[in-house]
Image (cartoon, rainbow, N blue to C red; front, top):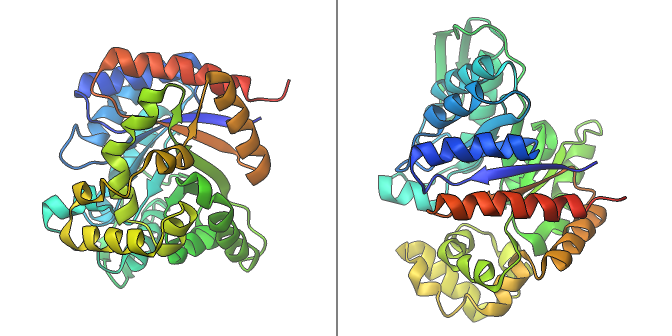
Length: 325
């Protein structure tokens, strides 16, 4: 059976993030992923509270090696693992322009940053004293106080280098652009085959838009997605030469608002699962079957708690109805 999860983007107050995580387990979700957005409620404080009030759901941050040193991340995630009784996981990304640009952090050498982060996490989670030298980070006589930890690591990316890294070393590959799933998973699978026939968990994260308003809401964030995407992904979304050039300019200028002419209704519909609840259930079922997905995660990012709670319940029903009878 397919597993289901929520991806909370903490644009709401911290107590609402915690309430959403607790409610997600009560409804039946298997995973709760909280985005490390830097300027919003702290991901680890929120997950610590969720960990103490839940029993079965796996809990983890989506974080990067730019805004937090990997050793700090190793200790923080190990703490969540301890508080939750061994239910932590972590999703690593290269760091998006939404977070890095306001901090003045250049997104340089993302492959090396993610690779170093994975090596630091696994070395420290061994429980041993670690001396280690990477390309972006290093450790000198470092040891965690939590002891050895067995914590899964997922990678989310749209770039080919990190997709290959996910295939070679990660426990899961998390993908976010529906039209690009086939191409992205092909890259992951080829790398996994070359690394001894591994099979990382296959995860899709996206909106399930069961009202026209939900389709249109994606306009708030899709500009950042486009600016952080390679040409392969932009082509999968049907962008022509001029539109792809506009995305490049917007990325250089850090100007997602400049993409309003590129973000058409057709693009919004292609990007996400959408339609009536029945059509969305059929869309999820087709996506899972076509791409042999193990897990489907849904975005939760409204400022309004009641709206988010309704989304959790409605979407879980849609996901449940997508399962074979």
